[in-house]
Amino acid sequence: MRLVIFGPPGAGKGTQASILAENYAIPQLSTGDILREATETGSELAKRSAAIMNEGKLVDDKTMLAIIEERIQRPDCAGGFILDGFPRTLAQAKGLEALMVKFDTALDHVIELAVDDEELIHRIAARVRASESSRSDDTPETLRKRLVVYHDQTAPLLPFYEERQLLRKVDGMKPVHEVKARIASILGG
Ligand code: AMP
Image (cartoon, rainbow, N blue to C red):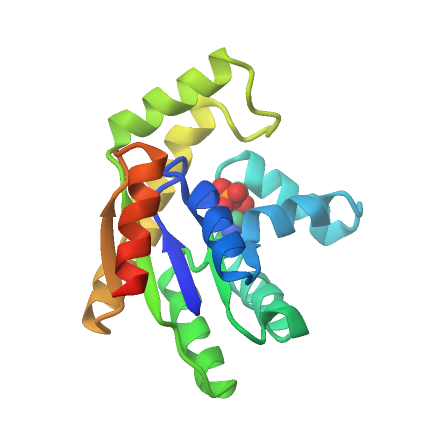
């Protein structure tokens, strides 16, 4: 099973990706997590990425594609993977498509978690109030910037995947267990 979990920041991609990873026993590849782990190395590249992430902007496509190309070749991805937070630009989606051809495989589904902006801002404000987040980019101000980036650069992937008949839209405003059940029915059917 090769999946992309797609949606705006705060839509619940990580939550659903980790449920799926456990159910299908395949890895959850969160590019945000990979970048956050890399920032701990203190390299030049890591410092540059950390600054970009804190501003809510996107790390460049070449870097992201190199990370994914390396990661999906590891043995734990032989039975599939769940991409969480990648691709985020048209160039990344096209690069991923080329990688799938290169490795003689294909994506099975792109699952879109649809949540409106107002709800996302409300969710993050609640997380900040409850001090639930330890991420330095988890602030209402950065979220607003990330939403602009999402609408400008990431949302154009929706028609791209629709054309390829890979897009499955799920209402991400529903409670976690309902979203989970809806995704399970898509994957089961
Ligand atoms: P996330 O944990 O998916 O919300 O990602 C956190 C931050 O990491 C994003 O705001 C970006 O700065 C960076 N990032 C994660 N994935 C990507 C990607 N596919 N392309 C570019 N930047 C990314």
